[in-house]
Length: 173
Ligand code: K1U
Ligand code: ZN
Image 1 (spheres, protein in one colour):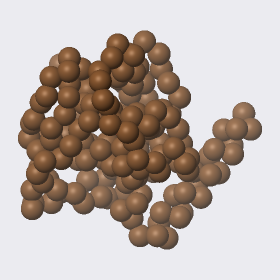
Image 2 (cartoon, helix red, strand yellow; image 1 turned 90 degrees about the vertical axis):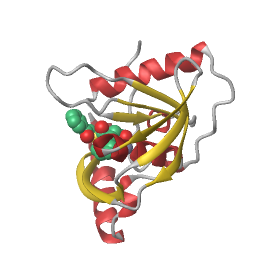
Image 3 (cartoon, rainbow, N blue to C red; image 1 turned 30 degrees about the vertical axis):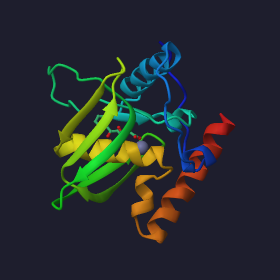
């Protein structure tokens, strides 16, 4: 397995619509495994393929945060939100493509998601709590949307400027 470099905003690849997976292959399973390793290494609770420059509808997640609890690595090809609750939840979100920046985002508190798992089987499940927030954040990545797109323009511009500076500093190293 390989840890892949994570793209930092602003990057045109983070704004593009990712293409659906037509057929599962060993290559795509390898990509999912690399993404899980990259996510755990970061560390993060989710990662979407566009964040490593792959414009494919693939996300990985593990929102188990309790010390000592069994990990729940989750791989989703072509994830789709089938239903969303009227009830909303606000969570202070972060993003591995926007390091060290956090902001409150309000989203449906519960969602029903359908996807193809690592074995090629169709799955449908209801998510709540942090899993619901995370799966919506990751599916947004597949549609070229970042959590800062939910913020007021001024705040979004401020964060973008910080990221441009961070990328310039990193490039100088
Ligand atoms: O998609 C990403 O960039 C990953 C992102 C997912 C996410 C975080 C918070 C709300 C919604 C979606 C992250 O994982 S940021 C890092 C993070 O939240 C975290 C890192 C270590 C331990 C616990 C959380
Ligand atoms: Zn993100």
